[in-house]
Every structure is written in structure tokens, then in C-alpha cells.
Image 1 (cartoon, rainbow, N blue to C red):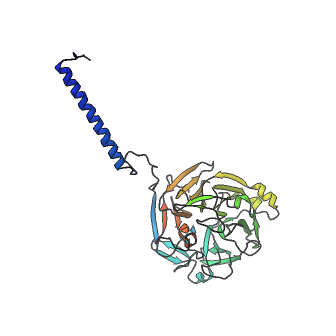
Image 2: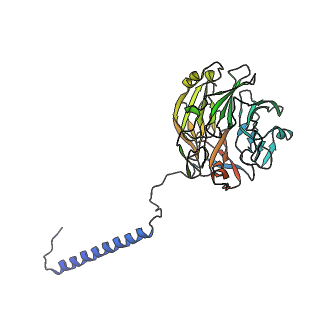
Image 3: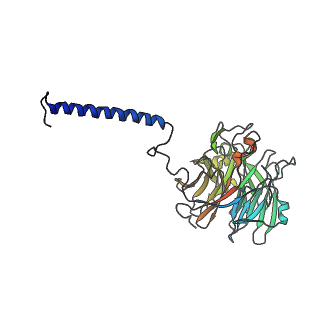
Length: 396
């Protein structure tokens, strides 16, 4: 650029302009500082965020229930959807087991059969289209001894075919039977695999030979079925450490279970853990297998997340609920994990059923029960049932 003589009028004018620009810069800097102070603690439009955390946008509320909190869910071969409404934590009006259509619950398998049910929880449909239901056998506020049972229900006749009482030594006084899967490839009538989450610190898997009704307790108190000592989890926005005597969040041992599509492996995960385990059903169903053999057959499948419900898709992938992420996660056959759905409304995603190219999911509010809040009920009615359309359609 061209230099001006130091004493020229033009030079004086240039110096004045420089001083003016400097003053403006200082003024803008001060104003900017004041503005930043004024919005301290407030998110700015240009701030980075966790994109899509609030919702993946593929979830809709299928129905709302004013009084009943659904837990188990199953889709019958004829398309009917069955929901269980357990009473072990709190009682409610209406049926404890029902078929669902939007806005309506019809007692299942019949109104009369409701008297034979106490607290239905986990359920599954076997390869022959038969429904199998776990009954916790205890109601909230009752001092009666728990009478847990496995029920076989025929959807074609809407009748209870058989009730398998679960008694000692297969169950303990502190047992909490939770979920069930039916393997029709072992045993003359099949084999049931049941998770005993335990109300205290004695979880296990329970194996029932469906022909004889004989039940065995296996892998009791071993690492693969047990809570992780000192385990910390987030539930409904609260952190809680595993404490058998004073729980502040839902906790316990083995919870969700699932079978591979060919029934050769059983998968499970403790609630107070982030790890998935599996074992060959041939070994688990073998009544002659020693505990050492059973433990040796267990495979650590790696970390997945804190799960409650688990379902096997026709393509062999596992769909699992994720309590901390308020989400549903897909575990591909090669172990790859992907997010299926995430939504703030998934307070405690519970059980799933594939329904066409979508997933029906029960949503619990278990972390809000009085037991975790010094006797204060923090639940917010109504309870919801949601439908999720996966990013890619579930293979049928």
C-alpha cells in the first residue's frame, strides 16, 4: 500500500480512523463479554448436542392403560396380542391376563380362568403355537406363601392345559420367577428354561422337563446369573448401586432369556449387569450334567447393556431392551450392536413381541415404585404400550 507523509492531513485523518476502529473493536469485545455473561448456562443454537437422544422418531403410543401396568407380551399365531398384568408389586382392577386390541382388554384365556391366575409375568409362544406363562404366585400385600407355577395355555381352545407347580428345591423362599422360553428339541415333550431373578442374592436358571414336570435348579449363584458386586446403574434418571438390603433402583440376577432360532443355545443376562451369556441347550437340558459341566459350557458373549426383555428375530439377531439408554438394541448374529429405537418415554422398556414389520413393547415404571422411594409412589399414569418400526424391517 502507499505510505503517506507523517505530517500530512491525510495521515492525521488515517490515524483518527484507526483510533475509531480500535474503539469500536473494544466496545464490541466488551459487549460480547456482557452478552456471554448474560447467557451463561444457557444452550446456544451453535452448541453441540447428542443428536437424536430424545427420540429416534420411530415410536408411537399404541395404547394407554389408566390402572394396569403391562409386563409380559406375546403374539399368538392367529395374530392376537396377549398382555400380562402382574400383581406382585401392586394390585389393579381388570384382568391379570388379557388379549389386547386398541382401547380394549378381554380376559384371556377366559373370564373364568382369571381366578386361576395370581400374578402372570413372563410368557412365550413355542414352535407349535402354544402359549407358556409364568405365574409369580404372589400378590402385593398378601402374607400367603408364594406359589410360583408354569402354565401351558392352548390358544386354539382358550383353555389352561396344564399347571406345573414350581416347588423346592427348584425354587427357594426368596425366588422370583421372571421369564421363560420353550425348547421343543430336547425332551419328549420339550424343555422349559426359566429365569429366577431372586428377591435377594440367590439367582439361578430353572429347567423343567415338560413330560414329567421335573424341575431342576442350575448354575445357582454363579457369575453368569448373578448381580455384579457394587454394580451401579441409571434408572429413570437416578443412579443406584446394587444393595440387596436397601435397593434404590430395580436390581437382581438373571432376568431376560432367549433361544436361538434353532433352539441350540439359550441366552440370558442378569439385571444388575451389562453382560450377555449363553450355553448349549443340549447341556442345560441334560439332567445328568454336573454343575462343573454346566459352568464350563457357559460362554460370555460380551457387554450389551442393562436389559430386561429379550426377543429373537427370525434372522437370528437378538433384540434387547436397554434400561439405561431408554432404548431397544439389536445384536446381530456376528455380535454387532445397533440402536433400534430410543425415546424418553421408554422409562423401563420391558417385553417385546414382533408384530409384522414392527415391534410391540411394554413399558414399565418399576423404578418409580414406592419400594425405591421410601414408600412414596412416583409413578405417573397412564401406563403405555408402544409400537416401534425398526430402521430396517424385521425379517419374517
